[in-house]
Image (cartoon, rainbow, N blue to C red; front, side):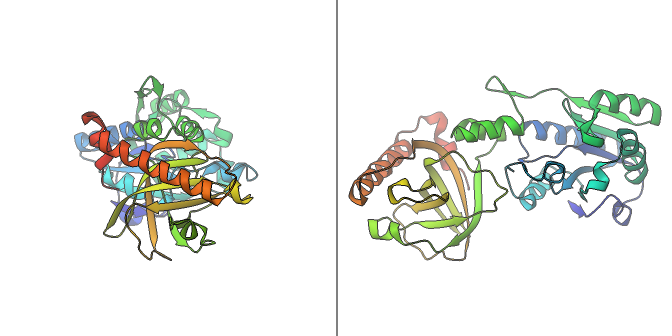
Length: 322
């Protein structure tokens, strides 16, 4: 996969027609993967190169700066996952208010047909484009007939009776349903960030934690305690992750604290990736530190029991490479 920094720069990497996948692809979930698989297959069939076009930053953060979207993963991870699907080029185009103002017709004629020279285009059933998303997949099909490119619209992907989409995944995470979210993602939901110094309270309780700092644009699951798996370089360990405001100590700011089972390691300033398996309980306030420590012991026992007693069908989900 080659990374292209704008539609204008594509000509430095490639000349000729392209088979193009369109979408924001946040999370690179099961629905996105259908679009990408079709794009790669069509490109191979037609003897073309394949490309995926994404906009950075997310269009909603430009159009509605007071309510930017909660992203499912850092953009660099999204690009890496796009490349892993077999796509030849990922075009990372800057999204500005000026770009947002172009009409659907301009987007198709100037970008898709002009600068990208797409001869086939693949989109999801609910794809929108142009000024304020006023263009639809049906409009794109009409433009394709007029301007001479083939359009392929991917039907909704259904997993567990639910239409797969980034919004559906965010709803599940907001409810703490990380197992269901992972099914739609076709991989565990994870957070990736840097370990920073905390107040040392976990160590005083007998459970030293790694305090994880992640980008503010990344969505966090609902507050509570989760069975997770943490990795940093060659280190991989089962873990218990608490997301919340630590009400027992009167805190107000959300934090992410990761306790690695049976392992104490200095991870300060190192990158840590935490994959979420299942939610153990909601966040709770305790009368004192002693009561909290007792509950943490119980949570750890619950987590280890889940790992030990998982049904054979779920064993693979509990031994993934994080």
